[in-house]
Length: 97
Image 1 (cartoon, rainbow, N blue to C red):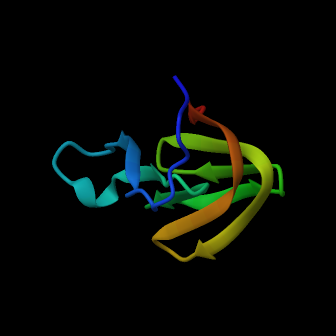
Image 2 (image 1 turned 135 degrees about the vertical axis):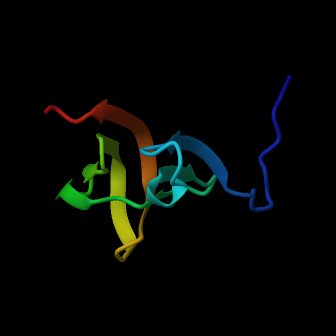
């Protein structure tokens, strides 16, 4: 079976929800990947490390590592961080206490 390339832009796919409070979802961190090579982290704490091959982002309880090539942070404010590039791998680890 031969697959045909997708020409239209697909909707965002939410692939990760990390609920920090069972009653208050306003502090929840969500990681969203779009099919054009973009990734958005909502409600993060800070960007720990950033190069064109790796980004390390701290949330309340986790560290998110994004690996790829030609990574560029295209938007960053106190609520959202958005990066694009060729994303190869995402790792999520609990923060050490």
